[in-house]
Length: 220
Image 1 (cartoon, rainbow, N blue to C red):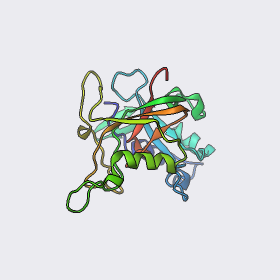
Image 2 (cartoon, rainbow, N blue to C red):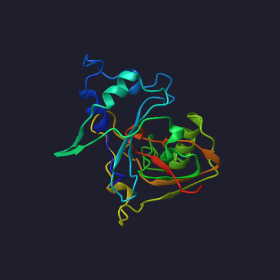
Image 3 (spheres, helix red, strand yellow):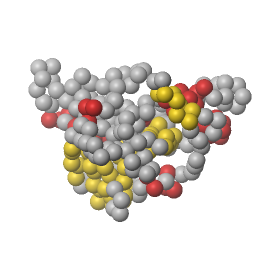
Image 4 (cartoon, one colour):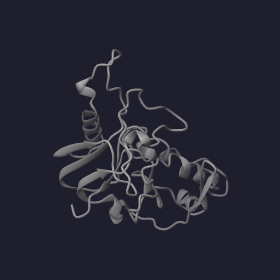
C-alpha cells in the first residue's frame, strides 16, 4: 500500500552508491539539521496513479542537494525491502514548486499515519491535553514556519486500493534509531489552511522517512 513506510530503504541504496568516486558517506545535510528546522533530507513515497501502491520515491531537502549526491542518486538501480527487490529509474529533479504532489494547496490529507512524537499520557495513563495529537501537530507547524491551519480533522483509516486499513495496521517503527513513544496514537489528519501553502508536508515521528506525509487535495 502507498502508506507502507519505505523507511530508510532509498537512503541505504543511495549510500551504497559511490559519491565522487570515493565511496564517501552522505553529507550531514542529508542526515541532520543543527538548528532542528528540518531542512535536511526527507525520503517520501508517492502514488502517482492513485492505485494504492507506491510507484515513486522522492528525495527532498530544503537545504538543497549537492551535485555529487544528485549524481549518486542517478546510479541507484534498485531498492530491497525484505526479500523483495524493486527496480528504480531516475525520472525527475527540480524545485518543490514544480512538483504537483507538493502543492500549493489550501487542503492537505495524510497519505501515511501521523505518529505523535511526544508522550500523550501521564505515567498513570491519563490524557495530557497540552500534548494531544492536534496540539503536537500545530506546535510542529509553528516551529517549522508554517501558518496555523483553520482546521484539523482526524480519521483512523483511509482508503488504499479499495480497502480501508486502520492506522495501526501500517508499519510505523523505524528499523534503526529511536522508537515512537509507547503511547503513540497513529491517525490520519486532514489540514486546511486559509491560503495555499507549498510542501512537501510531513510531520511527527518518522516524518523524514515517510510517516505523517500529507498530500494536496485536488482543486484546493
